[in-house]
Length: 92
Image (cartoon, rainbow, N blue to C red; front, side):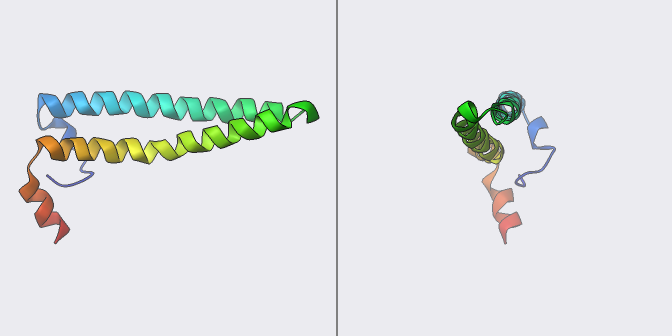
């Protein structure tokens, strides 16, 4: 199994299930990050809410950082149930 191969999710029913859960998590995190940035931007229009807007920007940035983490988690989950021999060949 090659890491980050787009066809990995079709190898078995377990692969499909992992892919579905990770795509759902990725979408929720992506949407949440975007919403936090939009609300944070609106809060910057008033001096009284700039600090709250800054916090929302920071939290949104953390959410954007979670995106690649979800994809890495997915690949590691595939490895737990996949063929380690193929990974060793691709890393050489």
